[in-house]
Image (tube, rainbow, N blue to C red; front, side, top):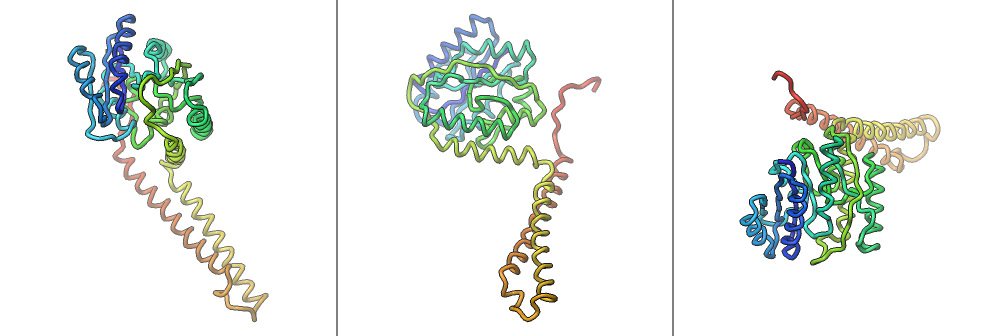
Length: 315
């Protein structure tokens, strides 16, 4: 099978039939062997009934249904586990992503050897204040933090080599950062393609401003895990040592001041520097211990780790 097209959705009953027909037209005109995998993320409308009907009339259509809304990352993860195609395409169900882009994305993966191609909606038809400006800020921060030079991390239209989706774990709300996860997993050839963005035809967006707040928090998480996930002592240990040195320096200052300079002054415990010193040394010790425990956990997990193997010879 050449292509698996994964479409996560939530309450998109108006657009599903039209999207299906559009994809089928593109597939047939390019003679692709394909499957369309709809992942219903707990829809409360007639979306699942439509998917079932489409599957009955088109054997290339498959469906997964969640009992409740788990989120786009979980929907994509379920689709990735099920996909059989050599190239996997993800796209949204709201008709804002054009299936006409699929052949170009497929060729970049198959013919030019990319591991991942991310769509770039250079010209958008969304609200400037609600989406465009926050999206630009979010993408700028993601580029600076991750080192992956993409203009549009959050574009739902992406193409993946099969090995990528089978070796990348997508959880929480990390679907925005699949290119970063792929890079961290060793898939370094990541590219970008300008794609057509269309105005929403039916319904309304399922995402609000909170997605950008969550996105920035997830960005901090993935940056921290990428940089210190395998070496927690480099962060917690260094910070702990710094805090302990600050606290110990205050303690030495107080001791010298009491013994040699201000012998008749107030008690050390009556001075604010004493509490700064005590707090800093306690925090420093705790941070150092946190780094030490983190190293033990990492070493334990390393012994049980599953490594991504690209090839085998005579095994």
